[in-house]
Amino acid sequence: MNTSKLTSLANKGVIVPTLPNLDHYWLPFTANRQFKSMPRLFKAAKGNYYTTINDRSVLDGTSGLWCVAAGHCREEIASAVAHQLRTLDYAPAFQNSHPLAFEAAERLAEFLPRGLDRIFFTGSGSESADTALKIALAYQRVTGNPLRNKLIGRERGYHGVNFGGLSVGGIAGNRKAFGNGLTGVDHIRHPLDINRNAFTRGLPQDGGIELANEFEQRITTLHDPATIAALIVEPMQGSAGVVLPPVGYLKRLREICDKYGILLIFDEVITGFGRLGTRFAVDYFGVVPDIITVAKGMTNGAVPMGAVAVKREIYDAFMANSPANAIELPHGYTYTAHPIGCAATIATLDIFENEKLVERAGNLSAHFEQAAHTLKGIPFVKDVRNIGLVAGIELESFPGKLGARAFATYLKCYEMGVLVRHTGEIIAISPPLTIEKHEIDRIFSCIAEALTSLAAEGEQGLDPTRYLKNEQQWAAHQQESHQQHATLEQAA
Ligand SMILES: Cc1ncc(COP(=O)(O)O)c(C=O)c1O
Image 1 (cartoon, rainbow, N blue to C red):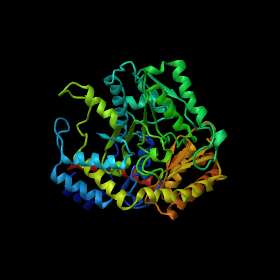
Image 2 (image 1 turned 60 degrees about the horizontal axis):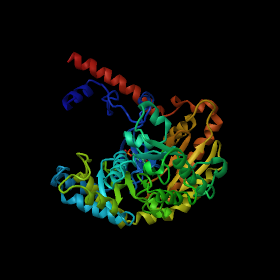
Image 3 (image 1 turned 90 degrees about the horizontal axis):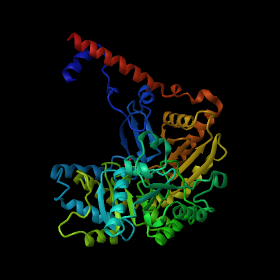
């Protein structure tokens, strides 16, 4: 609608909606009907805070979706992106390129663990996962092992939503609607054992080696290990509720992969870029995979972009074993190494360096752990898990209503001005690395307050329609206004 029409409507006393028509956008991983009855919209963000559409300030306890590591609306990234858009908006990704692609790859290689320094750019974490799987399969073929074509993932693993990542992923709810996925895929067990490890601070101490040994047992009894191309794991499973590897587990997986010539892929889309208080989980655990995937924090969430880094030997094998002038890897995206993504990556890496964000996260971890574990003893809390600046708070479910308690907690916290994430019956916290101690305290005290009031309210407290009255009124008003507009437009 044009401005003069809006003004004339306003002059006629119609309240002009400042918010969009909600009908057309189909939101991802969201209960659309529920959301549209109480839309939770942000209109701005700065530092560690969002501003909602109705001008409330909300502390970001989740770095957006684990991605805004350096805090919101960083001027350095905004100006690098703006400059790039005016200089070179796009260059063909196939058969041509641009200097910033090489600069971004070099800078990233310097930041990544040593040896993982050949970089393939993607547009997201899902694309990174699928790219890594394809590189693993193609590597086996190019090195004379075409029968190594099976992929192993893990229960509760999340590697994005494309068919490769979905197939090796292990979250049933994400998989079951979408058919069979890739064939030749198997999964190992996830390492969560609440009975044994509830309320452990940091990594669980026990069970790591036996659990990893199950991988060996599974591939030797169910498969011929010589048919396995790669094992993909998140060093810490984020999306399925903050599942930590017990001590020694990842190292043992590495040993088994080495023993059988299987490539090990670490999906570091969440754990990369300082989240654990080290640059990557590789640095935290001292275990180096053959391939690593990243995204999210790489551009501070400002531009969709991801990357796959491989060991130099892997890249070299493609170069050495492909015919001269042939395309060594028939794979890529229109937006591979997009100029604005590269500009955002370099600006983000500058911020990490200048502000020593990784060290900052490391220094805050002890305070964060202490604050997270104050939730022990709060109603419904059956486990608190933490590592670096990540915490998972697992709740007891209300009988027959799996996830309702975590969702109500999320809504209550949102109402109180703190953004937390809920997944199943787990609340996940992963604030920007720029978070202050008092803000960390506020996040966990807000969760405690929400759960305590849920305990007092009983089943009624789980009813989402009780929350966000402002937003609900707005949604109703929004619909009325749209109807009025439509009527007036017809009349005009
Ligand atoms: C470990 C991991 N891999 C892959 C992805 C997918 O990333 P994207 O949503 O950017 O496709 C995610 C997203 O949360 C993730 O946590």
